[in-house]
Length: 349
Image (cartoon, rainbow, N blue to C red; front, side, top):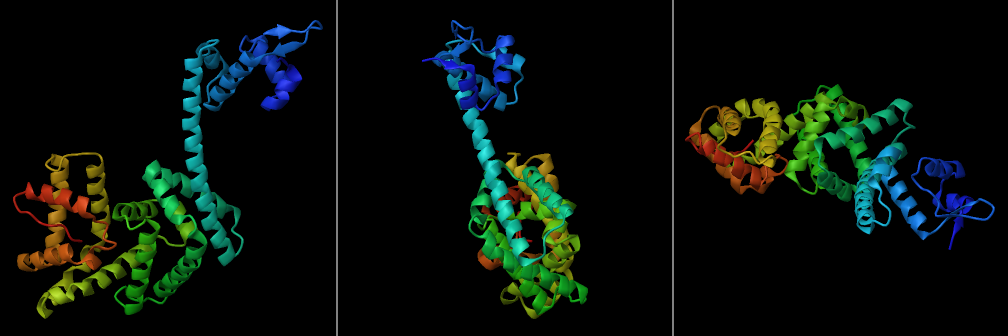
């Protein structure tokens, strides 16, 4: 069976001019010509055209494609198909992330006025930011958690954001019961978004802290993030009350929250070293362990006995660990690093 150039162009989604150009440069020479001089393409030519188009999608130039193609090379065709499948997989992941992002935007549109063009540009910037902080697997995890929840979560997020702005504008203290309740709901929402993954939670914090473009999209800037973080610290502080005496709680109230801002970047640095496979006894991780040790003691006002109580409470109380950014692998990793310093401490922010 032979196809004329017009039929092949139509079925391949190309122009006749493009096919003629392929022939002129020797990339796709038709196997036969009719008695009237028309170009005729057979099955082998169509297979070759598939290879050309597949390689074009991999951003190769026509010259590069010509150098790669060998007629009747079935193995070569299999390799091209494999590469195209991998490319399609990447595009599917990107499309899935875009779909999730647009669902979130849809929720915002339903809850507020039409965004201006700058808001849409900010949304695009946020997609780029995500790729900087998360691996493909992590983005897929976030997408799977968000799928089907975007519309349900959007009203709660809008409500919490509005309440956050009200509290900050009114000069409310992060220590107030209303502020603490807000922080607990906010962290609960993020944990649901990350599937309870403390590592992803800290990456979200790191991304939103360091990417100003996201502040306009989410309505939460660094001031708002700091307010939530401090309010959560006050809420967590109350959880230590069953484990401490009145005098120890007074010490905690004087020192605990003051260390709040230093913990997230330190936790992020330690997790990065762990994920990169850096040994816990390396010089870099020991330096982080020293900072961790100093923060832990400062939180307890330098009281070693109180610090031990905090360690035990953090280890045994799941409510204290929730939203801390520290999971069992990270705790074990930094614990081994601190042990190298000569004084083992179980981490607890």
